[in-house]
Image 1 (cartoon, rainbow, N blue to C red):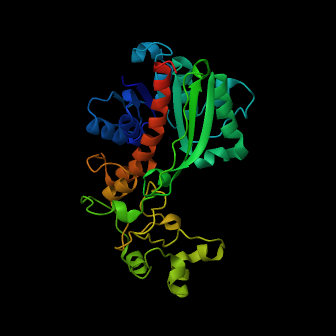
Image 2 (image 1 turned 90 degrees about the horizontal axis):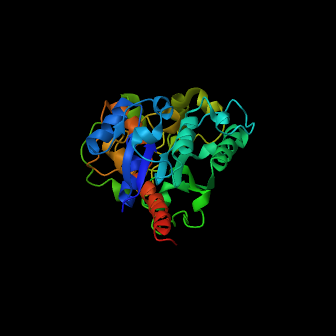
Image 3 (image 1 turned 180 degrees about the horizontal axis):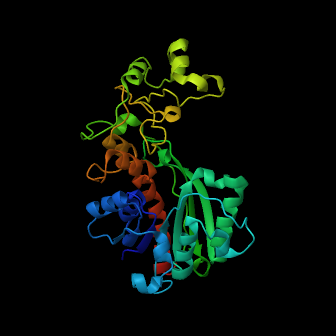
Length: 339
């Protein structure tokens, strides 16, 4: 038996692919961005991809729309963008989230009452708005009838050659808590570095630096940054940033083959958070970023180059999703077996 999942804010499919690898069957994926939705459709024609504003879907009779009875769905997954809440936590339940994208995730939870949910987000959600945002989200999950556990996981601990931290929240419906036991995955012993994923990468499009920036990166050693070039040269490039103080280690940052990548971003060339290729004075290509995110080489991304970079940068690494998905799947098997 394959447990069924609905995914919200599906993006380019990193989370959905990992859950598929863990054994889940997707019955619907909702994604508003046309290019990302096309990516999903291209790679998995059998998936029910809904390219629509989630606000237009959450207001419907979801049982009828998805042809599934309340509490029959096994897993609701996804992660809404982090936003502040206008009600400032007045204990109003769903009303505390109205006006945010998370509200629609909570509405799906309320209407479908899945056995479990997986909610992922940036680690900064924990401290966002002095912790108020995280508290409201946690309270809403509890008021909707779920026991919730949360933890910040680093993808580097789970087979991904990248330092990428995500907040993972896993909920189990309270009436099933005695039968479904979900734990967070154990860390891998070996933690991969760029050398492990950047061999024989298929050719793909990629951005290039200006001639001036390329000349600068030619003198930055692998694993180095602006401190590793002549001071006058660094000062001219950094301009006002030179006088702001702080580490600024992301400026003119060149990766090394013997370290994991820093977090893959939505743009390959941002001055404060640069990630230059270890062996060449250029940003990583589309397929190199996809490798670093742990996407398989046959996972095609649709849209222009900028859109493809954005889709990859926003994605949950499939291997991280797989490890989390395996544990949720085991928990649901416990319910099936009457454990």
